[in-house]
Length: 241
Image (tube, rainbow, N blue to C red; front, side, top):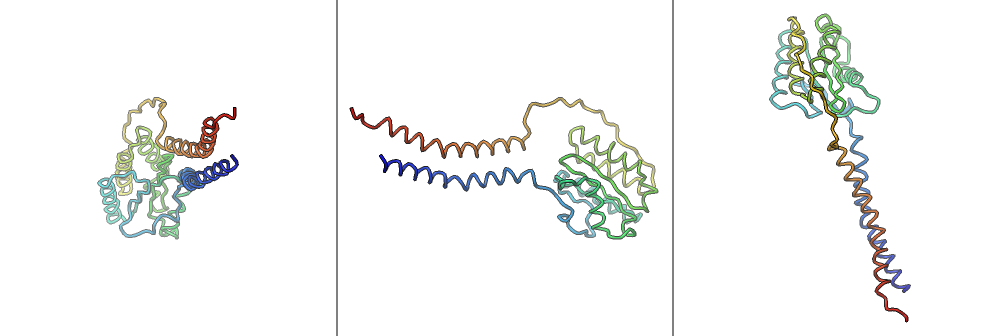
């Protein structure tokens, strides 16, 4: 009996040590997933053909090309420049506006360099939008127009089904028109859809729930299997009577 208990403990230890790396790996993935964020230091330095930086991976290739070409034509025709940046999740305490200011400072360190610049930043997790501009273009891209582009052209489309591509194309059209000295075409007319609250779990939440269930299940198995083995051994022992 003593020898069997020692074997049982050895089996339990073996099972526990076998699944421990799996548990640790799944726990690490589970905890690390929400922490992924984009900082300004992760955005590449500016190049001559950098007009759109899609870190949020929400713009189609054709629309990225279309927007980039429009911004490049604007720069060649007027000297005014616009850049669009999407990110997926901000660092803790960061806002789209603070991120935009930091990125503008990184790309254009001096006020003179910033003067003819406009920078549009969107966080695809919160759909927060920031549109900032330099002093030279403020006479064209006023605060009221900038707010209208951010809230009425972009945010309204995102509330209406996360229509990123449509929102960015319409925003770029307004920005190019305004910074070319043309009349602001204004925001598009959008029919707001009533959002019905859904009982379906988000995919991200489902993945976390599944990972948690696996971790708990493996830990339970490491405890229950040896106990069940011992129980089966006990009931199959011949009676002393």
